[in-house]
Length: 356
Image 1: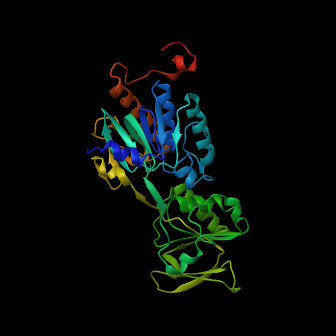
Image 2 (image 1 turned 135 degrees about the vertical axis):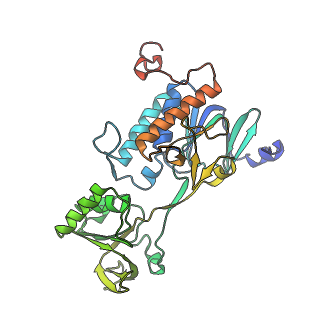
Image 3 (image 1 turned 180 degrees about the horizontal axis):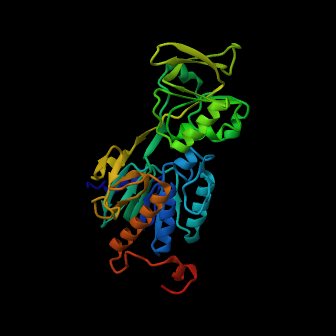
């Protein structure tokens, strides 16, 4: 990899900062990254997180802070923001730094180690763990031109405060987990909830779909299959809008429904950014790894939603295990005398227990 001349590099980072060399640098402050930072501290190595977002938590905080998560071990249910809070508290035990608002734009190799480069800073590191989730992401917007002027004025692609929709007539567009999860969670807040989808095939968990269908049967909600937005109308002539015209994509007819909030839940557009240039095997924005989270490039590992391997499950729970595996492999790669398996935390001196 070509190095930047030192004079140019010094000029480029005159207003930035060159951080001290770390054993492990984790790209991404989502659940897998946060647990990885804690785990690196538990293994007794220096570590840091670098993330482009302004706060830790990844997608959980950026998109779903008020959604309940039901499949994290030890929690019957937990709000996404509360899970992130607990993960941050856990990693704070070792005082390892997090560098937020730092988008990595380049990777260099210099003096026998890696250097991750952002627009302002440099992060020297002996190893890298990519825990970047789906990469840089943005919500997929509604394709209809009539919707665009209403974004932020009744159309919202992120729900940060579900109580803001109390008493509203909410239309949710989509057929995946996000659409049905919010459909169910808003039943107790909104005056009415409608989910509309272009087909009659849903990608959400059956239990959630059935719960929403039960609300439809009880006249507390509506489900419109083979429908899409055709127009946005204001019966009063002023904001906010009061009605949405829906088009039946099969019958080619239109129906007008009452709604003053639209929540498009259409998935996300992701971008791996500079990681695409690092010589890793990437398919459909997923990094192919081995069972040891090895990317194939020595010293670079990956974990969480960003990876693909045989038997991969895109769950927070499995991401925790992958982060631990990646850290253990990185530690052994840097310090071959250290075991891959650290033993049980209940016996570790670092926690004041029996010396390991």
